[in-house]
Length: 89
Image 1 (spheres, rainbow, N blue to C red):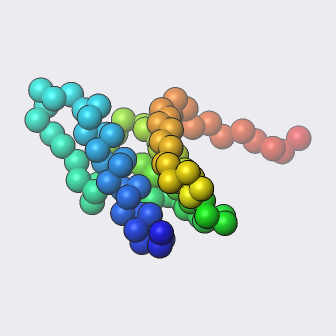
Image 2: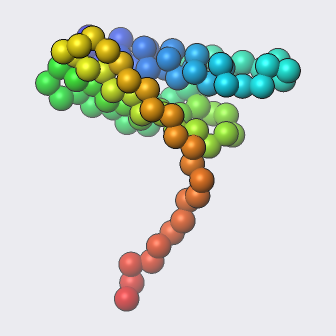
């Protein structure tokens, strides 16, 4: 799988997941244009990506493609806090 195909796959899966969990009564859906890749890499036959959407829900997604098994794993996280911790004395 090429990096372009992997990124397209990640964006499609995250978009579908986000749309499945949106409140249906809002009548709002996102597209892959609303999904972005924060970071990705390939090690041997495995791919990993961190992704998010432009929704204000604080969700973050980690996707891992197991090249040996032909399986993709999705972990969905909710951001609870962003805190600065000073390292000065």
